[in-house]
Length: 278
Image 1 (cartoon, rainbow, N blue to C red):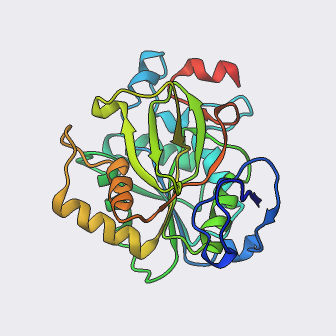
Image 2 (image 1 turned 30 degrees about the vertical axis):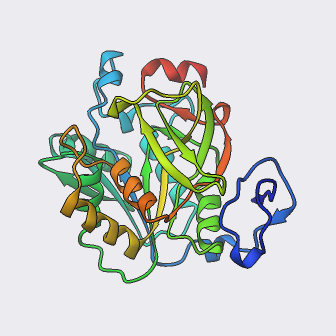
């Protein structure tokens, strides 16, 4: 992985805002081994309704959607994690889908996964909180992952390397795209100052910058932000979402959001038709 000092030139020890662009002039020194310490937790958030997938005729949970290479969205994500040193991998699902996932895990001999079921899923923020609540680690990182985002190979590893080398508390890689479903705004120092979500009824820009479904938190920071969120914040739809966790982190100026590519390199699987272009 390379970092480009194109946008701000500060000493390496104090650098805060970078964009990872085309191969450039600053090489990270963190090794893959250091990027993946023993206390590295991964939580796959897979408790959505998958409304658009069902409208397209696919009735199984979205994570079980088959890809052209024979894997599913879920197994592809697990494969990405399996290349790293994971202390634990958790899959958060809706309770009504528990038996489907249990059978799938058994049929495919997936042994390194803990299933976390919620009977009253109010939003992905609730799912993140529930999946994290009995992890008692005092140090390490927790990565919240969507499994319906097809990012490039090694993107997760590279994100962890960046997160640990720069000593960040929240790392959220982004991509540039047109007609985004969500977007973010930055100040002159490239710090994130605002999130825009269609689900909040906000008008989206024609071109924007959005996350790719990887959110790496210092585990203590994740617990702190989640605790604060559930004390004070509900969004307008009566749900707590991962979006709300990001907003809380933004208010604390905690988010590091490197831009790592374009939408041509990343696919958001939100309908069966998307796979036709893969």
